Amino acid sequence: MAVNIDEGEPGTFKDRWYLELDPHRFLEGMLVAAWVVGISEIYVYLRDEYAGCRAILERELSALQKNPPCALPPIYLRRGPGVHLRRRVGDDRVESRAARHAAPAPAVCRTGRPLRPSHARAQIWNRCTWVREIVEKGPQWFSGHGRDGRKGLRSFSVSGRVKKPGVHVAPAGITVS
Image 1 (cartoon, rainbow, N blue to C red):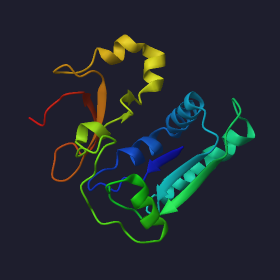
Image 2 (cartoon, rainbow, N blue to C red):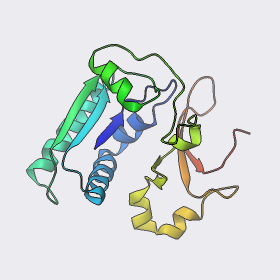
Image 3 (cartoon, one colour):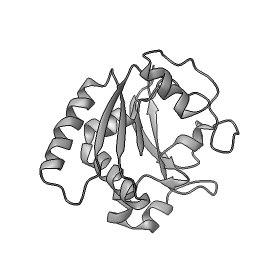
């Protein structure tokens, strides 16, 4: 399994924010996902600029490996100089490992259609990544959020000249207005 904490998209920082706020949420989600699909190895791809996140992950992974709650697959942290989405995720990983910044290019989803922002928001293969809250509060709580036929919550990175910069959670289907 490859876990991408690169956030090469301009203006994005929600992964870093969540990782610094609650590293165990990240680790739990990673391990649950690996267990569900039977993963034998995990590679965490982390951009070089996130030295603080790397230190957090190294510390928490070390503690986890000393006292594992279950059998752990090997977990590898990989560094990269930072990249932007390309046509296929593998392309930018290859360029990043070669220490070249990938040039921005239109991203496409698995169907080959252009990637819309809604494809990337807190979803993996059309499955939400709010596992902890759903387990704690129930699936009705999560599906009770949303607008215009969409269900759940999404995280948004907000920066620039705004009153409240940061990471904000909003119902799925919300519009900018």
